[in-house]
Image 1: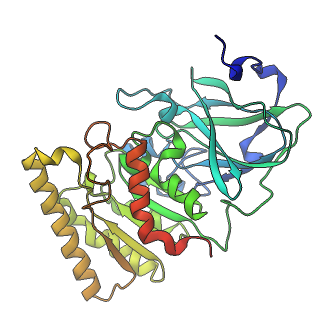
Image 2 (image 1 turned 180 degrees about the horizontal axis):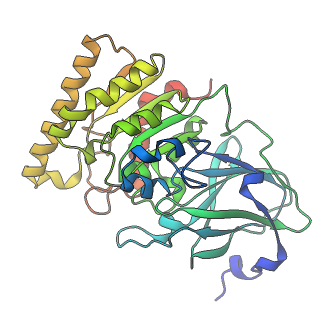
Image 3 (image 1 turned 120 degrees about the vertical axis):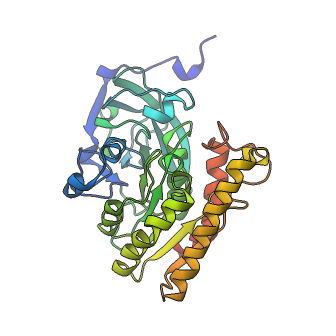
Length: 353
């Protein structure tokens, strides 16, 4: 039986396409990045490790905001790599997903499934023809060379017409620095990465500086963070560090940011209580040592007068049932929802008044 969703499938040649550059891109921290939709600044390329340059080409956290009265919304996009992984759906790695603003909240309505390095997909169809606000999130673990939004030939497609989840000098972004988890591993679709969940809930642009396996507090990344005019900086990098590497680099990294941004709140996030630690006592001890070094650093920073820093314990960031990860570490959508909800208890001061 044919599902009614596919009964009148639109063809690519029936659509009118607009490049996302002519709409509104959000989530891009640096005006001049090393690739077009990249996440590290061009000016710091000589100081960045090759791993950061490679991962920085992934478009995690970037999105396009737009307004349309089309009954159909589609997309065509060209990937940089066409990556696949054995623990994360392709829809999260290299697909896009679409949300509509409905009664003051963002509602998920469709996913663009990738099928090649160049893909075309319909997000949603059969809508009534009225103006609506949309946001489409870019791939998490691949980069994009180009993205075009498609609508009906006679429909309007333009930049957003309201102030929800847009670039704004009055509502500066929240910046998240961290690991594969921060980047979005292993969300089923891009909008489920926890920085994006928080962005929708708090009506704030978010900058995703998560780098899989490489949230190691490189000093060059502290310089990069200082280039972003953010309202808050969330440091969620402990899964990529060790107790010793924290002792070696964390103080310099954090104080470089805190001195440059004395009025910006910095949140230090502990390791989450990953479910496998109930039996892996060796790793549990290592992470507890790392958390202890992190706490001691926080206490030192307070003693030295860095009062713009806040600490977030990891004990219950994921809940207690152990049902929040793909592989013991990387989050499922449930894990991302819980983690975002826990962080929002600290970040709710940035919600709309």
